[in-house]
Structures are given as structure tokens and as C-alpha cells.
Length: 301
Ligand SMILES: [Zn+2]
Ligand SMILES: [Zn+2]
Image (cartoon, rainbow, N blue to C red; front, side, top):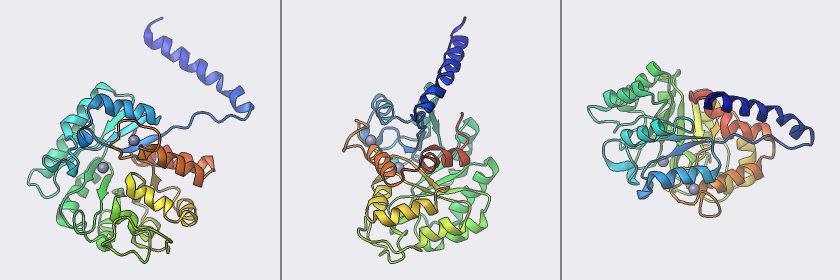
């Protein structure tokens, strides 16, 4: 028996014993996909990144590269660095492709990495308006390759003008967009003040992001980072209803730069706990942890 046959046989046996486990009421292990991670994040090396993802308990990690400059404002690595990890760890990592939105070589750089196997575009975190021709050009490429685009919305800084993003969703209705960061999550609240980055307190539904998720089948939400977590804990009563309402649109991600991968210092570990506490329904949890990501990203089985 060679190694592959042995592994197949082991897997079959493992699947075979899953039944008695269910019979005594135990749930099979929950698959978790981390939609949002970076190489060299705040200087963290590859070995520590891999250790972090293992401790976090995720089976697949989506690595989001920076453009050729700026390191996504957190020293993050670019296309080459994410590609390197995926080539070495093809059963646990996939990557997106990225470039500065208004750079003259943006489209050709992203396309080169889509051809190499990138399964999405982003993290788009550059100083352009969210409905600019630069984003439109990237969306045309995304449609051609049938991949989603992950957008960092930050008032006054990145992908500005979120109140006009519906134009892009309409113009590029076959492209899936994933919203992320402070201005995306602040705008779940109808009364959001655009200059506030981490708003607290009660949420009034029907904010811009809430509407975009409701009205456009190609709009999704990335629960990662302090901004995603803040949206879940600032008004938990609202969060439960929000998750139920958008259960087919929300995707778990960590975006954390710690080296531990568990406990209070790990934002990803805390967000996993919060989701499980707010939404005990396993079917909805599974959508957030893996199902929705698999629906819009071609992550291997
Ligand atoms: Zn990020
Ligand atoms: Zn962490």
C-alpha cells in the first residue's frame, strides 16, 4: 500500500466511525474557513502565521496580498509571498491576487496571478473612490475569471463613497463583492456617523451595508477584524437578527496579526466564540464558517 492508498483507507475508516458519534449526539467537527489573512502581517513570519492558523482550528485560509506598495498599511506581503505559502501548503491555503487600484499595471498584474491560480481579488485597500473607473476595470477582470473582490471600505481613506457603491453592484451584477472594514460595518446602522470608526451602542437597521446585503445578491460581508467583531457585540440583540437576515451572505474571517491563535489576544478566536454564542443554530453557523465562502470562492473540497 502506498501513502496515498493508506491515506484514502484511513479517511474511509474515519468517515465510517462518524455514525456512532452522531448516534450519541455528538456533532461532527465543524469546518472553518478563514476568509481574511495576510503574510508578514505586522512583521509576523510564515512559520508563526501557519502556527496561528493551526491553533485557530481553521482548515482553509484565504491569503490576501498587498499591492506593490504600502503593504495594506500593515507591512503585509504581496502576490509572491502569498503564492509561496499556497504552493508549499496546497491543502490548507488558497490566495487572492492584488495590485494598487489606480496603478497603470493593475489589471495585468492581477491577471498574471489569476492565471497562476489566485481564486479572488483583494484586499482592495487603496485611495480610490469605490465607484471609480479603477474599481470598474478590476470588476471586468473579476467577471472574466469568475472570482470575487474583497473591498476595504474606510471613510476618508480607502474605497470612499460607500453611499454610491450600489452603482458598481448594478453595473457588475455578475461579480461578487465582499465588504470589509470600519466603514462597511459602521454602516449597518441607519444613523451611522461616517467619521466614527468603531461606533458603540444600539443599531437602527437599514443602514447602507444592511441595504446593500438585502438588495443585491452579489454583495457579501466579511466578519473579520475589530470592525466585524464590533458590529456583532455593540448591540447583540440586533446582531442576532442581522445574522439571521443575512445568513447566506456573511463570511467568517480573522484578519488577526497575533501569534497565538487562541484566547483573548486572538480576534479570530473571539469572533468564533461570539458567533457560536449568538447563533447556537448549527446550520447557520456552518454557513458563516464555511458554506458561504465555498459558494463564492472555488476552495478545494
Ligand atoms: Zn486585512
Ligand atoms: Zn489571532
